[in-house]
Image (cartoon, rainbow, N blue to C red; front, top):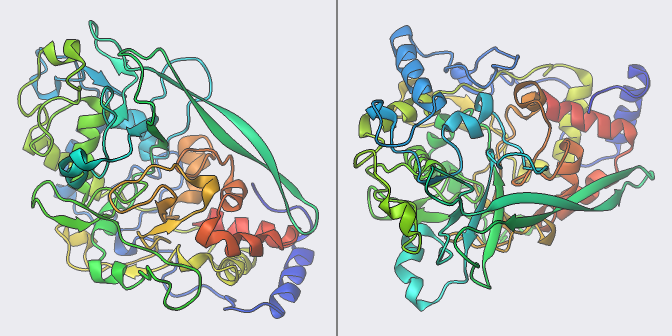
Amino acid sequence: MHLLSRPVTALLTALALSACDANGPRFDEPEPGEALSGGDATVRKFDHNAFSMPSANLDPVRRLDFSVGNSFFRNPWVIAPASTTARDGLGPLFNTNACQSCHIKDGRGRPAEDERGNAVSMLVRLSIPAADEHAEVLRERGIAPEPTYGGQLQDMAIPGVAPEGKVRLAYDTHIERFADGFEVELRSPRLTITNLGYGPMHPETQFSVRVAPAMIGLGLLEAIPESAILANADPDDSNGNGISGRPNRVFDQVTGETSLGRFGWKAGQPNLNQQNADAFFNDMGLSTSLFSGRSCTQVQTDCLAMPQGGEPEVSDNILSMVLFYTRNLGVPARRNVDNPTVLAGKTLFHQAGCQSCHVPKFTTGDATEPELANQVIRPYTDLLLHDMGEGLADNRPEFDATGREWRTPPLWGIGLTQTVSDHTQFLHDGRARNLLEAVLWHGGEAEPAKRAVLEFDSAERSALLAFLESL
């Protein structure tokens, strides 16, 4: 959605007049360094490769390591046994054969919407209501997996093994209306799973549709000190502002202890290495030193009987190269930070209260990668869980996250989604077809912010979108 629907001078005059009576901060000029979303690591690339660049402050030798990691992220894995021993062991059940297939150009995935092919950059998480016998698996996985199909539906398989099922979405729609009468159609997804390969699912199966998020800036998010994240937590809403962000506490496979969750739509992973290893295991059926064995369940005997590509199939060396790559995907610089319309939209963003969850700025601490340490970054997230209302609920708990809670997603780079990913589908399941729809799906703790936005007139809507598109 782009500006402008009426002359610029009239737009800015209307914004100035409306902002005079509003409560909250005013932003008449950009903050120092505001364009550098990733600090010194910020990249200046704005085309379809904008999300695939190494941190700008990475030296030439380390850029070679970045390229090696990129090759393992980009190139497909093959069925075992194979002459390509470093890349064999795919499946037997899987969602994709390469990381890049979900995170195309390191960008945002999209939901499956027709009958052709597989879901690819969308997946479906599965679980059942937890009982006493699930205590140990709950501690380690945060969910009780569906007994036959496990914790994630895998819609592809190698020859000789039946895929678990076929996934499609259909949509119901409803209208949200602004105070000035402007209407926006929102769509609610309805999940359909057909061709179940291993019989019926548990009658109380819980489903959660997820699309692949963009990969930029993950190492910077990992480098934010835990104390800085917890400083924004207010689980009891002690300040009475209606925002009660909570940390998710999740299992760390290396330490065997509970740790702060940072990654995934519900902050279900404590660090980037475990996030990567989980994706190798569940998305591609590849074992690592963190997740050994097979992603098949005991019911899936054909899957269990297939040859493996070694144990682990992804060596610690390969895992470390992919970790280096995913840590150092740079964040593009902001565009148009000094544009008056963008600044007016930033004012409206704050006046609506959006920054309460989409916290604009952090300073990273010590980091394994020195380029990422002590950087002032602007990710627009608090990495905490928030109740987003019944409309966005998947009703599937994950560790401490309830079925109505989601981790605040970072907004940096969101304005380049169309350029990089060739679509503008947002939220955890891609239901929003543009940024305005994404805003209007906010509920729960964000309901007051959405109500404030619904009072915006055409000029104010345009300014808010101009600000979001500048991120």
